[in-house]
Length: 369
Image (cartoon, rainbow, N blue to C red; front, top):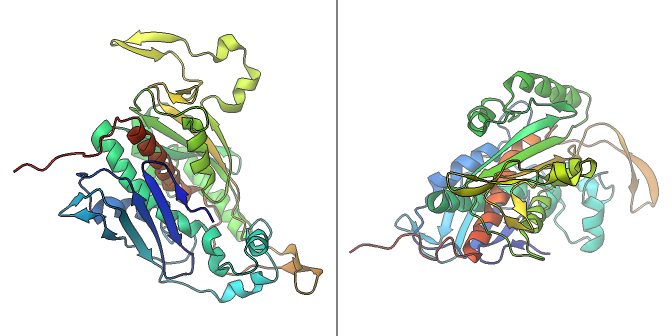
């Protein structure tokens, strides 16, 4: 397995959905960053299960513990180890999936790749539960970016099952509204329609997907290491490491295929002595390098694979087709809980590149005698 991400700001995720714990080790975080569990917990609370009527009914406190790398309230430069304990675990519903794999899930591919030795309980390493480790590490990366560079990262739901949110250009309004509704959209008028659609899908024993947009502001010019560690490449790799992500587009995205060059090209201009562009079809990245404009991208989230509707599958032991009806606790729509995960993965990539480009130093603040 490959469970590490990043070069300078490097994380290693560990734990399984129904194992003892889920956690992360961060190697390469600069020393002198003010950090405590209070900086991590709010982000975990945004991701944790059981937070609303449209999320899984699994109840987990997801109370973070920092085990190493922080002393007297500051990072030491040593590896930071953090974890949360799994407490509300019921693995009984998963015995069946050892033999009858769930359509749309990794039960079959994981069994084949690891010879049946993989932890199948709750999906093991292939469960959305492991994204809690991403959020822990992401919270550290966000604080690092915010404290040193004033970088701000905001993600929000813009579509659920074909229902589109009204486009809002004002980032401050997006930030103000996104946590006011459990669907995490900035368009409060459309939020109720989205929620109703999720509830309808759940009542039908089904699930639904959607689209998340992420906007990053105050990004320094020059982040990204072309060719194979371009900023788009590394953000895309990190985002695709989130279970259920099936697509990503930056800036104008697939619309560029219908544009002329004169329409797509972002024209340069001066504003307050800075070189900016009049439009941002590039999504804040040119040649794999940040331009100083906001980084914008959108990602497609598939419907949750585990649904209660009867589905066709196979019995591996009996070598015949069969029907499968899944029981247990699953999100009818994973999009709202994925919002903080998207922000976290973005933060980790940007922190890594900022350290690589030397705009974040190895020591954030020095002790005074």
